[in-house]
Length: 261
Figure 1 (tube, helix red, strand yellow):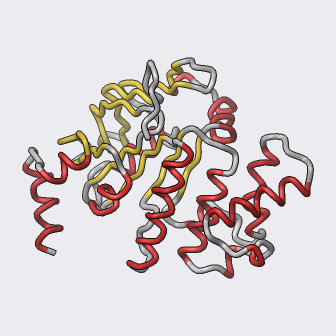
Figure 2 (cartoon, one colour):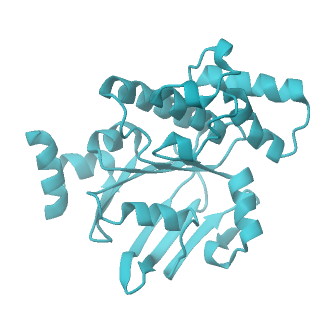
């Protein structure tokens, strides 16, 4: 459910990032509201991953602006933040779910340790309480309690993603970035994981930006969809409208290719 708010959580205006003389994305504008899920779709090389990197401050904002409404209610220009200020957002307000769970987990630390670490980073010190919170979150992502002391290195790909999701949600973020969270998984595992993500996002009222090449993922979990081609946005709107009645020729081709497939 999208929360009522006087201002968007994320406000992007004419934003772009370049690699040398080439723009990875440019001229991107949209607002993201509290509790809203935005899917960014397009083929490989469309600029969607560059956009995600820029929004999450893993890449510089080279043109335009990206403003974020902090927990204190201030609209902050992300380009003006220092590295410690960005790290604080990552620790307290932002999460990032990687396509490859190994990039977002410590693979040889226990599942419980992975989920508990963000709590410790936010000041928690009572081992029993940290372990209980970690156990609760592992249960919420449907990992059996008796596997809390096993490492992600021993888990399947789908289970690793579940641990990564728990690690990113345990501290109560306001905004979560997801980069192809179900890519590379078996179809049946993808479906279960998407159901889990959709349920958790709705329960927690999270705002999410999810990058995906799979239009079925966009349809299942997003309120709005932004379509990218050649580093630019060619269409955006309510997900059902974009996918059922695409206006841009490129979006029509994307939807048509899915239907034919």
